[in-house]
Length: 185
Image 1 (cartoon, one colour):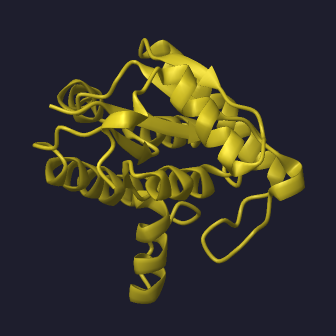
Image 2 (image 1 turned 180 degrees about the vertical axis):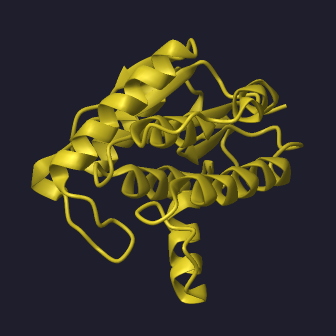
């Protein structure tokens, strides 16, 4: 079985850019489910959006995250996930909503590595778009909730500050001690 690593952190901190760089190097990478769900829910004109109905939105994200993980279950490769189930829990807690116990139970089944890469807020690259509507200040508050949740769940957080993307990817690889000679490109 492969190793499943989470890359988490603040909205707009460069997670997707980093994931794309790791994919380009040859790693298996999974997209951020919540961003895709926002796009889909807006197209369908539902209220399952974080700014309308966070609980409903998180249920959709949780189910899609489980499905995404199952697709990669039999891989023997290192896989990077753009966010994980603890991020869902953090977003619910930020909105003062108690996460369902099944979310906590699922974390153990996801076989996440305990080492997690966390990207702190970076104002110089933060931009709003159709899926990222929160202010930088709100993104910062949610970031601290994310960090608290991961720590409370026993994950070891490795903060990777803003760097040029190639340098950031190399730092992640070095921090996690990943052998890049075994990557299938």
